[in-house]
Image 1 (tube, rainbow, N blue to C red):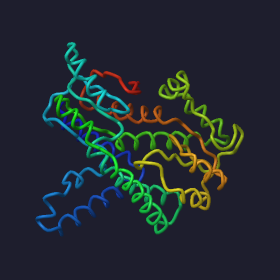
Image 2: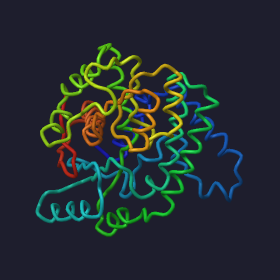
Image 3: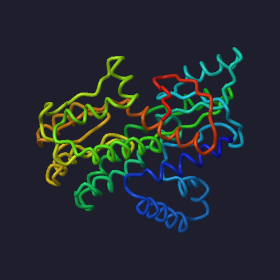
Image 4: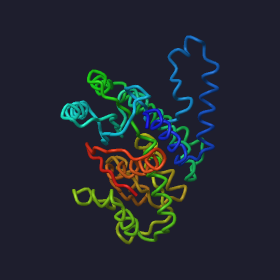
Length: 318
């Protein structure tokens, strides 16, 4: 399969799994097209044309020819310069690596990923928070993340890939959408009464089983085994952790439990303040689940790949 086919499928499947719904994604892309059409020719020169068809700034081909034939792929949750050097070393040892895929964004995909937080406007709205409120609180969070990104050196991994001629892409929201939709559907079907039932459900999946073996088991952060769930919200996509104000709004909207990958200490306190149960599924395990669901679709559509696991990624086929 070619790199461009992998990229195209990732975007298409990411859109299908988007928790906002396909109609909202189409509306988002239509808005971008309208904004682009009224730009001057000079401003169009620097416009990210790719964003007109790919709604996820954090999922991109960073370096390499899109017509590259891919048979062996090295995948890691975090790909940094040391992993690029490792790929080069393995290639020099006779293990041909056609493509390196990072889950967490790097390079341009990291510089612009704050824009992906805009997804949270509609995700939170679907939980019952009015759209005028979600637009306001999410826009402030986007500005905060953008400021933090601007201070960082984002080109290091891209430069390493370019200097060593290692084809590199990122697959962030396209994978996170899958874990969010999958777990939300599974929990909705289960209709759990107590939090311990959510933990038991997570432990059925190989990604979370593996995490438990290495000391990263899912656990209840706020609440206990017999805390009743109420309405459960799986919050695992949208670029980064959402705004602090969202916890108060979720409580008001009737959400009883949130299931997350990770949560900052400030957010934990805010969730507790507003009586929200919190199940911490686990960051790397959840990233693995999203990637594996995406790779299952890729292999079913385009054929099997040889996977080299690194940087916390483990391939579990279904």
